[in-house]
Length: 113
Length: 113
Image (cartoon, rainbow over all chains, first blue to last red; front, side, top):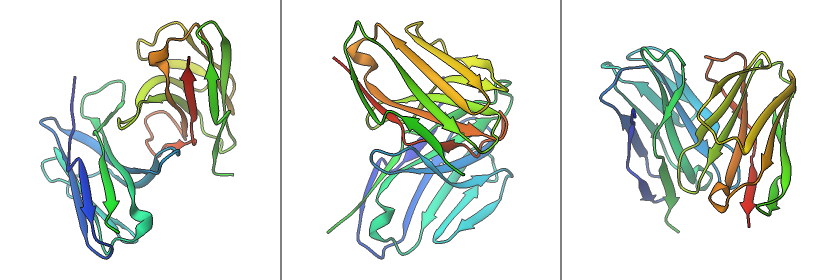
């Protein structure tokens, strides 16, 4: 089936560092979404992107819809302990008549003590 | 009210039991979803209800039976489950199907023994 390649799989960072993660595919997407999931909770939508080239911020988070429509990145600036969790990208493929979301495998963010 | 409420939070059931998971939202959303999530994996879509009608069934085994009694409620009836069905079951809702600002519930952690 269709795949999103999300990287890195996990990140160990110091508090205060900037973080970057991305998702890529060989297919073209209409929509890119970034979610964060805390342990024992459901995913929470962070940023939604609907147009190629779109750059959107939500506080310390910034995400971009790649110009080729095949990728997206999420940046977190000045990380804090509550940023710990698993970040998922998800996208809706062009031409998918069921309008379903394809999910990346997740990036686990861990802050070094 | 901007929440999706799922009950119970945890459930342990035997392979011969019948149980139900419940989901409720009062945001006026007309699309509701059941997802299954295994540890360290992204959510997998099981069912989509749009305007209280089943729109998508992702080839889910018949031991899982969804029900949408009204626009605010979504149930998942479970019968004769297998240990490999143990997972986090997430309910989500959105304004309409094809609008991706899903709101997820906290999930039901299901263990089949």
